[in-house]
Length: 283
Picture 1: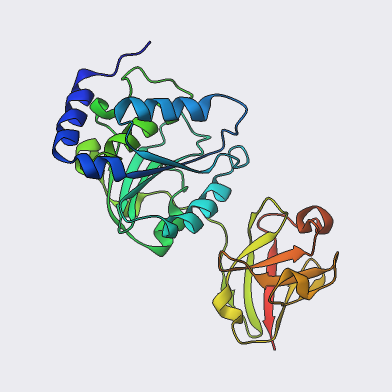
Picture 2: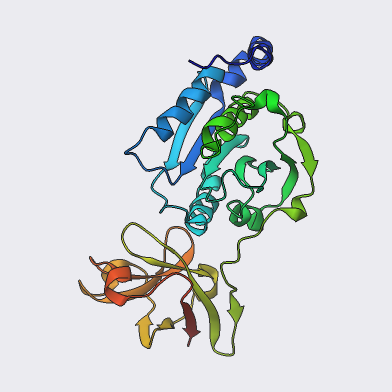
């Protein structure tokens, strides 16, 4: 069994002795595309517990479709506002694992982000700017310098997240980098038109609802509809504003305009996909 490096244990013991109550209250979230069939998520939690068993772990989701960075970006962007200031979010959807892509930690006003530099954090950072960012080059905070080429969630991101949530300053984790150099994920633009707003589908949820990148503020207090794939879909307030099996457009709890079918699956029934263009028409 791998033994935790002494340097890490000393760092944590000293912190815990000085900040016992804070260490117990700290929150660390996990998001991945690992699913729940294999042991990957459990192993990451084990690594975190080796460093600080007092941390409060919350699973955002581990059901991100495999390698779907855009879905991870959306889910994290819509989850972070509901957590206490100082929360550490570890997100691992990492098709470039083992390549030259950077492993990073980012500080922003609400807390910290830890994961690969592949655009997964670009949704959060489009809403609230980064204060600081580092490349995770300090091996003292890795699980081991002998990295797996396929599981940086275990060997880098989980242990770094645990140390960060235990009070280790972000500047100690590695080399400082300019937040402006972080990878941005292009999900398409949202632009005003002469008749409304044009955007695209940015996410498909478990129910098959098609979530656009058009903020709901564009339709507040208006009569409106959505045009997509040759369809004209009326704007509503709730799913039940239309009959069972009928299609509706509305603003979801996440604040974005979405397309849904009452008691149905819009994705499978309408054959509309990610990045497909739609337009909100206001009357």
